[in-house]
Length: 222
Ligand SMILES: [Zn+2]
Image 1 (cartoon, rainbow, N blue to C red):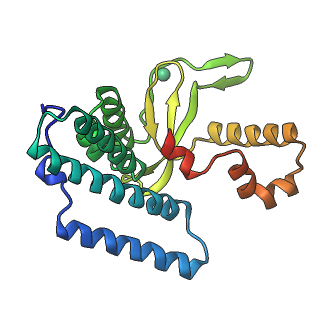
Image 2 (tube, rainbow, N blue to C red; image 1 turned 90 degrees about the horizontal axis):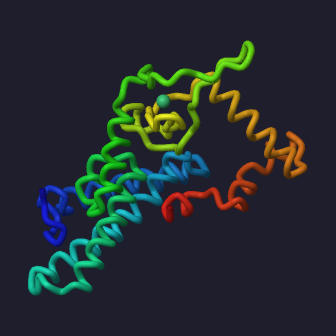
């Protein structure tokens, strides 16, 4: 395994080709924004994450370069570790968990990215063996939506990471019927709590989410 203070492995350093590719992807996203008037949630996520990736990667490269001169500069090593974590977050936000696991210096976070990468590629039907709750005629699993992730397996669509709150098993897959109903019930409860009716919700959903702080910036700061 790589030692923490070592610079990035060569295959993760941004090559001129990769820089061109990123510029192309960003141009494509801008074009999409102009033609549609607004970005899809996927495009918006990719645009934010790509900007963070570019900035974190520039810091990683600069600090790695500076550390080549003096490998014992503790303050710089700490800054490099932080920059690598930021780079990992930006990659994870794009669903590039395998790359995130490569750059993340913290072993718990690295384990999380590795787990998410397997959760993305798992067969959609695969589930844990936890027994469901049974309440009269109702049978409920322990599943809930842990987060929404970009899934390379599902054509880079935003997909729920469905997690069992009993054993922690996760699978990134389309919503089950049960979870769809749970989501609907939750938003109805939220609406009642806030005193909104359905029409208000429909027209103000985006603004309400922003006022709750549920925007991509929040995801990034997690
Ligand atoms: Zn379970």
